[in-house]
Amino acid sequence: MPLVVEGLRYAIAGRPLLGPVDLRLDHGGITAVMGPNGAGKSVLLRLLHGLVRASSGRISWAGRALDDGIRRRQAMVFQKPVLLRRSVAANIDFALKLRAVPDIAGRRDELMRLARLDHVAQRPARVLSGGEQQRLAIVRALALEPDVLFLDEPTASLDPAATLAIEDLAKTVRDRGVKIILITHDAGQARRLADDIVFLHGGRVTEHTPATRFFERPASAEAAAFLAGKIVL
Ligand SMILES: Nc1ncnc2c1ncn2[C@@H]1O[C@H](COP(=O)(O)OP(=O)(O)O)[C@@H](O)[C@H]1O
Ligand SMILES: [Mg+2]
Figure (cartoon, rainbow, N blue to C red):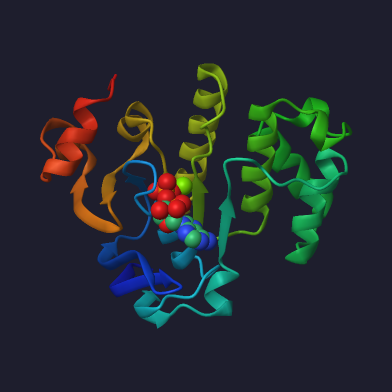
């Protein structure tokens, strides 16, 4: 499934917001996309998921140009989870029905245990805490059995304990063979989770580096400056 991006550009009303971007990502593992606010991280994710159409360039997954069939094998979770005004269980059932999964009840219970939400199954999703809502959004995405899960700053508004719970869940999802592409401005989180780092600045990738190397010695001046202003634990 390696992702290949070639000459990708995105502009709105003639104003370039991203690109040109060339990128190759391996199958599996967690890739973190980092960079300052406004660098183009969210735009890049939307392009990779086909939510917006590139102005030029190519995106292919496993040698196949991004199309609706590939999009159905992907899922995305945003910083503010978008949940149905129904119970926790019903939110998961909705996704399982989309995939026509057999044994919905069994699979739902498994997903709720994974998210550690089994004790609140019948509660309305919107009364959950921010961290619980985000865990629900992630396992609901997992119900779609994606090959790729995009996470756009999933812990940006969460406290440290809730953040670590999301990180544990992300690792479990990764261990199930789902490729995760994670936007984070939290360098500690990228260090804890990521195999490789894509660093964006001004709409361009200044480097794509294995995570261990990135945090020891980033290759680009832009990433070095970014990290110098961060506390990395
Ligand atoms: N729909 C849009 N219309 C106009 N400008 C946009 C739109 N979406 C994003 N931008 C601009 O594109 C740039 C990159 O945005 P974004 O990808 O959201 O940055 P970030 O790295 O913080 O996620 C920013 O300058 C932003 O203002
Ligand atoms: Mg963003």
